[in-house]
Structures are given as C-alpha cells and as structure tokens.
Length: 195
Image (tube, rainbow, N blue to C red; front, top):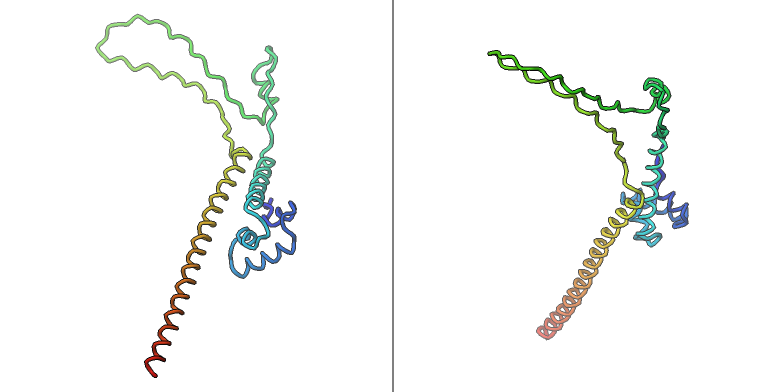
C-alpha cells in the first residue's frame, strides 16, 4: 500500500486548500524544491502543521506494517493431562520454544588407574533461548516528538539563515548609499575642477 502524500494529509486536516496544493506542486515542478518548504515560505502552512502531517504519514506507514503482520493469539495453558504433541497440534502456526532439557546427574564411577589421559566430559546442552520479538518501530508519541524536535531545529536554522540574509541586505544597502554619496562627491569635484 502506498503512503499518503503530505499534501493530501494537509488538505484532509484543513491546513491548506486544494488550490494552495496545486500552486505549490506547480512551483515544486518548476524549482525542484520540497513541497513543505514551498508551503511554509509562502505562508500557506506552519512548521508545526507540517510536522504533524509528517508524523501522521509515518503513523499511517506503521499501521500498514502492523496490519501486514498477522496477530498471533496468546497461548493458553493446556490442562495437565494433555501430552505436548497435542498442545503443539492446536497451535501449529505459533512459534514455540522447546523446554530446556533436564540433565540427570552423572553416575559416580570409581576411577581406574590407567596411563592414558581421560577424555574430556561431553559438554552439557545449553538451555534453549527465549524468543524475543523486537519492536520494529518506536512508539508513535516518541516518533512525533523526535520529528517535532527535528523540525524545530530546522526552523531555528532557517530563521538564523534569514536573519543573516537580512543583515547582509542591510549592509549592502548601506554600502550602496555610501557609494552613491561618494559618486555625488566625485561628480561635484569634477564639475568644480572643470570650471
């Protein structure tokens, strides 16, 4: 199943209109920039709304993966009298771990004198490992918080970039004023020299 596009999620939530989305998609096609970047810069949506849409998209993907994996019924304890093979037949699709084999104590043997070295005792069987199913995804709340934190960091970097750009624009404007003032002064001196 395909993931829902961010634009569709924003429309469903009422953050943007279809006209806004079409205009942003047209600009994305022209410039190659990201859709969220275009929508935020144009003022059609906010960082928070975009973060929530991304989180919802991630949660949709998680739901699809969760539905693809069948839910396994919990095993119920069988009555004492039923043999193991009958209990296993009832839950044939369920992975089971065989119980750890019990080792009877070794019989005591009186050592006999011999010149050959004694063979090492056989290794004891290791108990069977427990099956642990790892969770493939973090909890939705944790994922949402991490996406929001990432977007806040990007927003901070973007604001810093805008601030630097505005500072440079102001300095350029000031230098242009100084240059114009000096050009006027040079023109005045040339006129005074020519007369």
